[in-house]
Image (cartoon, rainbow, N blue to C red):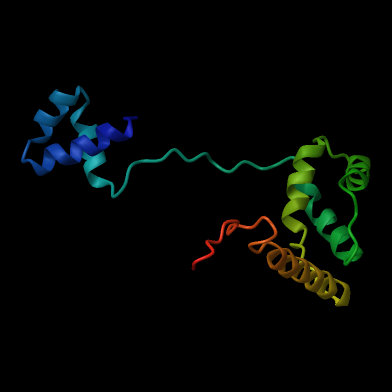
Length: 148
């Protein structure tokens, strides 16, 4: 497999009118490699075949347990103990990663009365601070000329 720059170079040389054989000689690759890179739209990417996970036979059980516990959540360590009793040979990390896909995203909590009060207090303290930083209180305008 060629690096990305060589794939781009094949296309550039072809646009310049070079023959497939000449490109192959210049880049020291086979003519079939040049043809293959010219046929493809983008650069070739390595893709691994999907393999079955050790967790696959137990996913239905996990889905049922998580659904039954909704809106609460069952800890991954508890579920690990359960599926190990069923014969699960894998570890905690695989289970934790799978459970993360099942967990719903947490909704932001609405700001209640207390939150609004806190926001008002912060805003009031900022206004007070700005009001006290005038010419006589160490603000930006410390020096005011008398004849202004």
